[in-house]
Length: 407
Image (cartoon, rainbow, N blue to C red):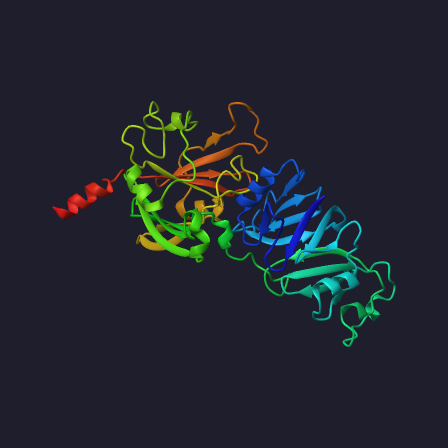
């Protein structure tokens, strides 16, 4: 049984790991994978057809815990303990919920102290007791006179006219004063771990197609002294088609991972199918394409990449007078909206069926790739975009551009 420390408005964890509000989905999954011998039977819950309308949930069924992530930014928004019999809980190092200590209204009063009077929800038949960043729900369905319970302000929480021994049914950790209105906070400093994260990505383009990317990057120091520099810094960097590996490393820093593609299922559709279709061209070592991943659940590559919050500006010519209209595609645009702006592709889509060499099955089904304006949109069966691949004519490297300017 897990033995966890509750920190209101911040986290749930122990000395080995911690689920912190604002934590990226990928980090939470990494914790679960690392401790898979202890934390077992984890479910991923999401809406297959409307993934942006419902929270993405990691359900730790063995431990009675749910981690609720914001559907858009995929950061941890709420930590819910829905079965307190499956976990030990403590606050400031002192247990308030174990097999020997029941989480009664008296115990909560003793452990957490005074707060505002609770709220009774007749529809749920639950009594909610709220602290800042922490709420407890008590089950009242066995008490016939629940609406009569009123606080007696003279004697603390235990004097609320709730039957003696009423126990907590659920506990919630969240940011702010209101569980219903809470939002996922910004990523805490402890989650950076010396890495650089892209807060947002703007596609740079001309009238023909993409030229490169403008990235707003967040960092919180680097190396062992990360806490000595306890603030988040934001920087902007531009990278272009035709940049060298050195250009990109200089702008963005060391990559999180490096992949060498042994196969390319889109290669047959390339004008030069004998060449590998790489991020860096295998012969020139210059940037050849950018791939922006949306990380929607229900896609074969889910959780391999963080979600890229991108914006792609478009200039649409409308009417006989060829009036120009500015609009923007984002991570959350759907394929039918994109077609309304860019028009329908002239060619049929390429059907892409991903699978590993060791296992030829893909439980999520195929996706469809459409090419428009030097961009390839990979479309999922729910009409959402799985990825956007940007192509552009290679530009001179940074050094060549600087030399050209010098002359």
